[in-house]
Image (cartoon, rainbow, N blue to C red; front, side):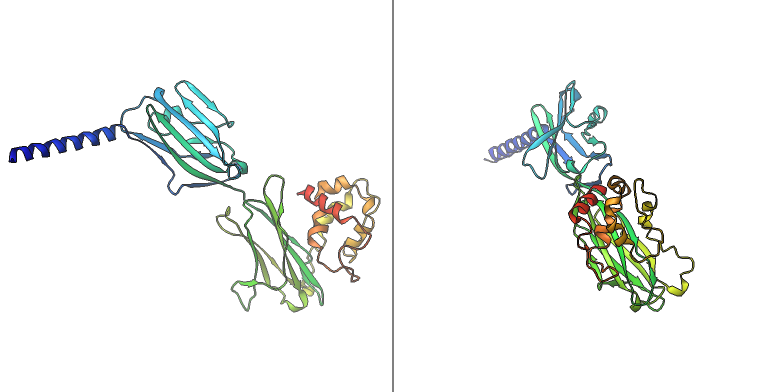
Length: 345
């Protein structure tokens, strides 16, 4: 009986070893990037990692590689690249997999100048006949905002409010955070501002990116001269927040301050204009003059100079000099200006 039991145990052990050997012999694994997500900036080149491991030596001529992409909006896969034997085809211009790296089990996909529309789930499928394996990774594409400050006259005058506009344009995805901070000599640490902050609507551009503005309305008579203000923009595409400072200056210290509305400067030399509203750049009714003589200006030139944003972004909630509310009745077609503003962007 002991001999039979020993023989049976040896037989079972041999069968187990044979089963493990057969399983190992037929094993093909694909490994993608840890975490399952790669994030890149728009227009960057990207390598989407895919490595495969075959328990048996493989011949590059018998290995097939196919890359697929599934967009977030369509539940359907599209081929991006395929390679098998002496056949190689890129369905997306510029897509490549290195045949030389395939020899060492690297089937990574290289894509030049990736665009927002190319975000989605990418699948790497490896075939080493008769075995097949695949892996998936999510490719996220972001676009960094272009940020600017547009300053009204930042000189403190009694009973005169100031508008400061912080603009972020061309960013993706839509989520963004724009805040305002200030500090003084008496309070040298940053203090977030909530009062007087006017957030603007988010505008979607034709290329899928977004624009947004935030306006800070200051009551200069209540602000201390030499207060330092800062616009802070936070977005997933930025390694660190974007920041830009400006300082309020008292009227008595204005001697060397350039107070012209600089974004209106091109109006001085607009070709085809019959009216020059900037004969005195300190006149309080500059905007009203422009609106009054709107039809005298060359609209195409205005579009090229990107001036329309001033009328649609900086002044919508601003009281004009004579107590009129935007837009002055009968002065201009507001819808037309909005369309031109979108064109300028």
